[in-house]
Length: 590
Ligand code: ARG
Image (tube, rainbow, N blue to C red; front, top):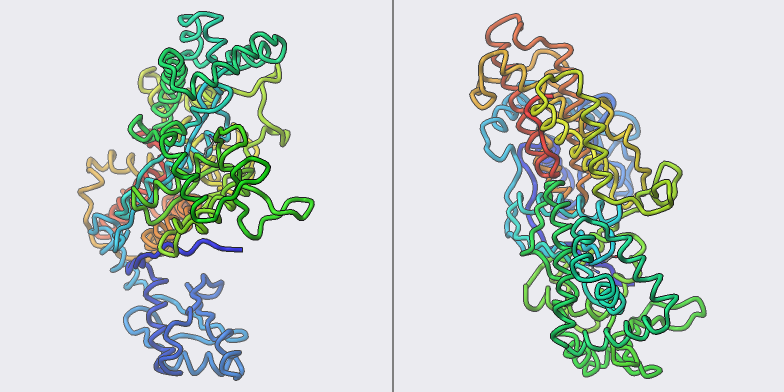
């Protein structure tokens, strides 16, 4: 089956990162020892138990050369010039090359990182255009926790790509079209426009939808009206379109409330809802039919992308135009992919959508490829989003069995956060502000710290814990640093002291932070914000150890105090920049 090409990027290596520096040195040694045909072998720089890093390339290389791995490692080590960076390489085990960096070199790199406004994060060159399709709730249907996840993860991906200098088009593929609108409009008319609007803007979306559904299922006359209404909507009847617009606008208002509350960057300008593509659908059909990609089957226009078969072994169709002439979800998405490639000229398409739609996207990409829209110059990927369940592993529901409203979850996160911090603040305004950042931060980070394609059980206690890989733990680390600077009567930005590394905890903190630039690049390439989250957790943990073991303000000498302030300032900047790339808010105190 066809696989998406890798995004034709970029040189995202961060020269601040020791891994990149060592990789380059090992490559040079490979060429010196074995010749230019080995220039592109991956040096396989990995963390080591016995040193800072180890290069593992000798193992696969030995196979290629038909020589014992230890011998290859020894020869490679003999050509490996680590002058000024690390001590002499040591061959160990079956053929690992262990490397221990000079602390002075780490300190100098950390100093460079501190004086770099980008903290070692490279600027992508060339910058490319990406369309990130995310959030995409459905009008007049409650956004569920799954949408919370695509929204939060998608927004982090966007922030990361933009920070690297790429151009990003946010695409909120709002579900605002289709047969349910017939029944929804009729229900709106039955209960009265004013009452309907009140209900929808208040976020009482589920009851509205369910009431319409119940009447549709039980009242044949209503069902008939609903069907006629769909025809009128598709035919462009003015009054029907006006009523439809009421539904869309009120839902939009509700989603915007949630986006603002969560600090998500989506605005109305990013809406490219399903209806946006209506005028393009006929030409999509014509183009696919003319190219022979789509054929009439049982009265419907279908594409049968190769490699997709149903349970019976027969080819699986993508239905492009139904036999009654109507269009569905597949057609809209085909129009969207053509539009994004041909009109927006995107080089990368990222669909941040639930795992259950995997087949849909695989088939969509296959058809787009057959049509010639999707070429090797474009990278299309489904950034798979796993399920969020309740503690019982099932869908989150209220006691009465209703799906939980998203806004209720957000409110509860903030209320619980307020309880966690309550005893520390007397000023209610300050407490509310902090509780908001902690609650929202916990909710968002809880989601972003899990690999996006795995499922997880939603658990307030876990996400709000002050220790472990949680939002509050990371926020707390930054608040601690701010408080050091408050006590010192300094602004963190004023700290430009030279860094010296004498204690192990100082060295470990400086070393981990140097990886920031590469990690941001990796998170962007794989569209995986959790990689960045894991890195930030490592930084916060290293900072905590440093904080416990190395007094900053009471340091033994002035120059050590300066150095520790500089390390703390660097940690604050790495953590706050990283958290802002994840969209996690930061309270000034905690
Ligand atoms: N509205 C859809 C849903 O709630 C998600 C749309 C995802 N984007 C897309 N281009 N199909 O399941």
